[in-house]
Length: 179
Image (cartoon, rainbow, N blue to C red):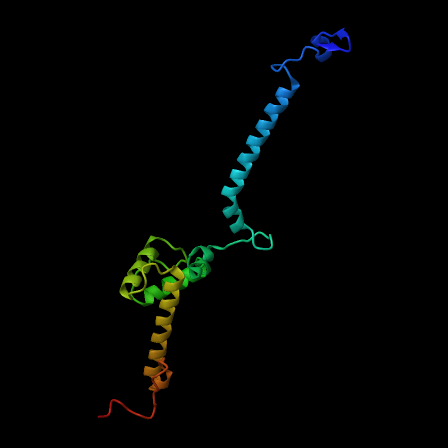
Protein backbone atom coordinates (compact mmCIF):
# COMPACT_ATOMS: atom_id res chain seq x y z
CA UNK A 1 0.00 0.00 0.00
CA UNK A 2 1.29 3.48 -0.80
CA UNK A 3 0.50 6.88 0.51
CA UNK A 4 1.63 9.41 -1.94
CA UNK A 5 4.89 7.99 -3.37
CA UNK A 6 5.93 6.28 -0.17
CA UNK A 7 5.29 2.61 0.44
CA UNK A 8 3.55 2.05 3.79
CA UNK A 9 3.41 -1.16 5.72
CA UNK A 10 -0.25 -1.88 6.51
CA UNK A 11 0.75 -3.21 9.93
CA UNK A 12 2.00 0.27 10.79
CA UNK A 13 -1.16 1.95 9.56
CA UNK A 14 -3.69 -0.45 11.10
CA UNK A 15 -1.61 -1.85 13.86
CA UNK A 16 -1.89 -5.53 14.54
CA UNK A 17 -5.61 -5.67 13.87
CA UNK A 18 -7.18 -8.61 12.24
CA UNK A 19 -10.77 -9.74 12.01
CA UNK A 20 -10.17 -12.43 14.60
CA UNK A 21 -8.88 -9.99 17.24
CA UNK A 22 -10.86 -6.97 16.21
CA UNK A 23 -12.81 -4.95 18.79
CA UNK A 24 -15.41 -4.80 16.07
CA UNK A 25 -15.89 -8.54 16.39
CA UNK A 26 -16.71 -8.21 20.09
CA UNK A 27 -19.11 -5.38 19.32
CA UNK A 28 -20.89 -7.52 16.76
CA UNK A 29 -21.06 -10.42 19.20
CA UNK A 30 -22.43 -8.09 21.87
CA UNK A 31 -25.01 -6.79 19.42
CA UNK A 32 -26.21 -10.34 18.67
CA UNK A 33 -26.39 -11.15 22.37
CA UNK A 34 -28.37 -7.96 22.99
CA UNK A 35 -30.70 -8.80 20.11
CA UNK A 36 -31.25 -12.32 21.51
CA UNK A 37 -32.04 -10.95 24.98
CA UNK A 38 -34.48 -8.43 23.48
CA UNK A 39 -36.29 -11.17 21.55
CA UNK A 40 -36.46 -13.31 24.70
CA UNK A 41 -37.92 -10.38 26.69
CA UNK A 42 -40.54 -9.73 24.01
CA UNK A 43 -41.55 -13.38 24.03
CA UNK A 44 -41.76 -13.33 27.83
CA UNK A 45 -43.85 -10.14 27.70
CA UNK A 46 -46.28 -11.79 25.27
CA UNK A 47 -46.63 -14.76 27.58
CA UNK A 48 -47.01 -12.60 30.69
CA UNK A 49 -49.36 -10.03 29.15
CA UNK A 50 -52.61 -11.95 29.79
CA UNK A 51 -51.61 -12.65 33.39
CA UNK A 52 -50.60 -9.06 34.01
CA UNK A 53 -53.72 -7.82 32.23
CA UNK A 54 -55.86 -9.73 34.71
CA UNK A 55 -53.87 -8.44 37.68
CA UNK A 56 -54.06 -4.78 36.67
CA UNK A 57 -57.28 -2.92 35.99
CA UNK A 58 -57.93 -0.63 33.07
CA UNK A 59 -56.49 2.36 34.92
CA UNK A 60 -53.33 0.48 35.90
CA UNK A 61 -54.33 -0.15 39.50
CA UNK A 62 -53.80 -3.59 40.97
CA UNK A 63 -57.06 -5.51 41.06
CA UNK A 64 -57.58 -7.78 44.06
CA UNK A 65 -60.03 -10.62 43.61
CA UNK A 66 -61.67 -12.39 46.50
CA UNK A 67 -62.43 -16.09 46.68
CA UNK A 68 -66.07 -15.24 45.89
CA UNK A 69 -64.90 -14.11 42.45
CA UNK A 70 -63.35 -17.54 41.93
CA UNK A 71 -66.72 -19.28 42.21
CA UNK A 72 -66.51 -20.04 45.93
CA UNK A 73 -69.64 -19.83 48.05
CA UNK A 74 -69.65 -16.39 49.76
CA UNK A 75 -71.95 -17.69 52.49
CA UNK A 76 -69.31 -20.24 53.43
CA UNK A 77 -66.79 -17.45 54.01
CA UNK A 78 -69.15 -15.56 56.30
CA UNK A 79 -70.13 -18.64 58.29
CA UNK A 80 -67.24 -18.54 60.71
CA UNK A 81 -68.14 -20.81 63.58
CA UNK A 82 -67.14 -19.51 66.99
CA UNK A 83 -66.45 -22.33 69.44
CA UNK A 84 -68.56 -22.57 72.57
CA UNK A 85 -67.11 -21.19 75.78
CA UNK A 86 -67.32 -23.08 79.07
CA UNK A 87 -70.68 -21.56 80.13
CA UNK A 88 -72.22 -22.39 76.76
CA UNK A 89 -70.90 -25.97 76.94
CA UNK A 90 -72.42 -26.30 80.43
CA UNK A 91 -75.76 -24.98 79.09
CA UNK A 92 -75.61 -27.44 76.18
CA UNK A 93 -74.84 -30.28 78.60
CA UNK A 94 -77.79 -29.25 80.82
CA UNK A 95 -80.10 -29.04 77.77
CA UNK A 96 -79.00 -32.47 76.54
CA UNK A 97 -79.56 -33.93 80.00
CA UNK A 98 -83.05 -32.35 80.21
CA UNK A 99 -83.87 -33.82 76.78
CA UNK A 100 -82.88 -37.34 77.86
CA UNK A 101 -79.33 -37.61 76.55
CA UNK A 102 -76.30 -38.49 78.68
CA UNK A 103 -73.48 -35.97 78.15
CA UNK A 104 -71.88 -36.86 81.47
CA UNK A 105 -71.41 -34.28 84.19
CA UNK A 106 -72.46 -30.67 83.56
CA UNK A 107 -68.96 -29.30 83.94
CA UNK A 108 -68.50 -27.03 80.92
CA UNK A 109 -65.91 -29.35 79.37
CA UNK A 110 -66.61 -30.58 75.87
CA UNK A 111 -65.41 -34.15 76.38
CA UNK A 112 -66.17 -37.49 74.75
CA UNK A 113 -69.47 -37.94 76.63
CA UNK A 114 -70.73 -34.54 75.49
CA UNK A 115 -69.56 -35.22 71.92
CA UNK A 116 -71.43 -38.53 71.94
CA UNK A 117 -74.61 -36.89 73.26
CA UNK A 118 -74.35 -34.15 70.62
CA UNK A 119 -74.06 -36.80 67.88
CA UNK A 120 -77.08 -38.66 69.28
CA UNK A 121 -79.11 -35.41 69.37
CA UNK A 122 -78.17 -34.63 65.77
CA UNK A 123 -79.47 -38.04 64.70
CA UNK A 124 -82.54 -37.92 66.96
CA UNK A 125 -83.66 -34.47 65.83
CA UNK A 126 -82.57 -35.04 62.21
CA UNK A 127 -80.27 -32.06 62.18
CA UNK A 128 -77.67 -31.55 59.48
CA UNK A 129 -74.78 -33.91 60.21
CA UNK A 130 -72.39 -30.99 59.79
CA UNK A 131 -74.25 -28.94 62.43
CA UNK A 132 -71.88 -27.04 64.68
CA UNK A 133 -71.96 -27.29 68.46
CA UNK A 134 -73.46 -23.79 68.51
CA UNK A 135 -76.30 -24.86 66.19
CA UNK A 136 -77.01 -27.85 68.41
CA UNK A 137 -77.00 -25.54 71.46
CA UNK A 138 -79.44 -23.15 69.77
CA UNK A 139 -81.72 -26.02 68.68
CA UNK A 140 -81.74 -27.70 72.09
CA UNK A 141 -82.36 -24.32 73.77
CA UNK A 142 -85.36 -23.71 71.49
CA UNK A 143 -86.69 -27.16 72.44
CA UNK A 144 -86.22 -26.44 76.16
CA UNK A 145 -87.96 -23.06 75.76
CA UNK A 146 -90.87 -24.68 73.86
CA UNK A 147 -91.21 -27.39 76.53
CA UNK A 148 -91.17 -24.75 79.28
CA UNK A 149 -93.87 -22.75 77.46
CA UNK A 150 -95.95 -25.91 77.02
CA UNK A 151 -95.62 -26.73 80.73
CA UNK A 152 -96.58 -23.16 81.67
CA UNK A 153 -99.61 -23.27 79.36
CA UNK A 154 -100.62 -26.68 80.70
CA UNK A 155 -100.32 -25.50 84.29
CA UNK A 156 -102.30 -22.30 83.72
CA UNK A 157 -104.73 -23.64 81.13
CA UNK A 158 -103.89 -20.65 78.93
CA UNK A 159 -103.12 -21.97 75.43
CA UNK A 160 -101.99 -18.52 74.27
CA UNK A 161 -98.68 -19.15 76.08
CA UNK A 162 -97.80 -21.92 73.64
CA UNK A 163 -95.50 -20.99 70.78
CA UNK A 164 -97.57 -20.62 67.62
CA UNK A 165 -96.74 -20.73 63.96
CA UNK A 166 -97.54 -17.52 62.07
CA UNK A 167 -100.60 -19.02 60.37
CA UNK A 168 -102.12 -20.44 63.56
CA UNK A 169 -104.05 -18.44 66.05
CA UNK A 170 -105.35 -19.79 69.31
CA UNK A 171 -108.57 -18.56 70.79
CA UNK A 172 -108.20 -19.18 74.55
CA UNK A 173 -112.00 -19.08 74.95
CA UNK A 174 -112.52 -22.15 72.75
CA UNK A 175 -112.30 -25.47 74.60
CA UNK A 176 -111.25 -28.27 72.26
CA UNK A 177 -111.70 -30.97 74.94
CA UNK A 178 -115.47 -30.42 75.25
CA UNK A 179 -117.14 -32.38 72.67
